[in-house]
Image (cartoon, rainbow, N blue to C red):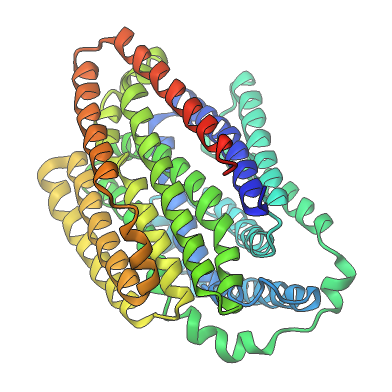
Amino acid sequence: MPDYIKQILHTQLFSVLNILCGFATLFILIKYMKVVEYGEYVLIQGFIAFSGLVLSQNIYSYARLHIPGASLAKQYGYLKTVISIVILGYLFVVLTSKILNFDDTIWAFFEINSKIGYLVLVVLGFELINLEFMRFFIATKNIYLKNYTQFFQKIFLLIAILVLVYLDSLSIISFLYIFIIGQFLVFSLFIMAINIREFIQSAFMKDVFQQGYQVALPLLPIGLISIALNYTDTLMISKLIDKEHVAQYGFASQIISIAMMMIGSSIVLTLFPYATEAHNNNDNILRTDFFLKMLKFGVALALLFYLLIILNSHFIINILNLDKYRDVPLYLSVLAIFPFFQVLYSISSHHLQLMKIFKIQVSFAVVVIFENMLLNYFMIKEYAVMGATFASLISYVTLSVLYIGVSFKSDKILFQMLKNIFTYKNIYYFIAFIASMAIIQFFNLYEKSLLLIFFNVIIFLFISLLVMKYKKRKFI
């Protein structure tokens, strides 16, 4: 069995475990945290995502192109250089903001009090460092360590939240405290996993300073796309409606984010180092083959996720008796389409970065970010929260179509191989899938729970048969 297949299966297993922990944590927060506080938590996530990207300076987008296949000394050199740049950027911005009294303005904009704000800064610091370690282990194909540490963090957070619920002490502040402890423990695990002596003795990679920003800074608007698409809507709902609606929309968005992280980490991030190594070895056919594998696995997982969400969202809301979140299944019926288009965008974006096609990506990023902001503003004012779901969906569709079009045009091998996927047989299956969704939505509308259980069993049997089929072909 090829190493990349083992890593995909291992990652998929831990993705399922992480999803279970993530959903359990999410539902506990929804059940026991005040609606307004959960709305604040959603806004904090947006702040951390935006700040994390800006303060990381996107410098890793250069380093990850050179880490796969490099010597151990150079790999540690890249890690040391990237982490040093990120820490210096973080300290410069935090200290400058404090000296110039910008911090209070920032907390007021995100509607966060200053005590919570300082805890968020600590979370952000650990998040920046741990993310660079995580990216390093992915680039060096040490997927197993990445999986173990992610699962450890998820299970620690879940247990700690259960303890807070038992002590009747769950609040946004107590949650941030345990989150910081979890981040520190993960940081400690990463430190133990590397060779400290090699890391300290490794030389700073001067090419990161000389050439890194030429790649990283133009790609910064590209990185802002996902943040704009995932958090502009929540911020505007907060400004135009209220935090209770932010909590409802954030609940639905969190479910989608968990799915997108699972698909991204198990497929795109697992296979991209292999595609990079093939590209660096001038093996264009193997490189393209890995991108097609990303596409096949990613689309299959995205469609499966959509099916399970449509089947079970009403049932879960009812069984947990979440009366304040009754509209969430309606939001999910639109938002659950996101992972499909996110797969197309993510694969195309990684492909274009590998091909060093940057300028057109920046143009796309600027256009889509402004489109998303305008659509969210006008559609939220007109259609409230449902307007945000459709505004973000339109932006995702626009983004993925633009990216995948340029990606295929830039790689004739990829285009030729892709033609083999869009056969009449596969198109027929896709139409049958859409028809099934319509039937399931009808059952949901009339709450035919027994029929929904029947559909879940059919899906389980179908997946089991599919796995057995591929095992016979010695594919896995």
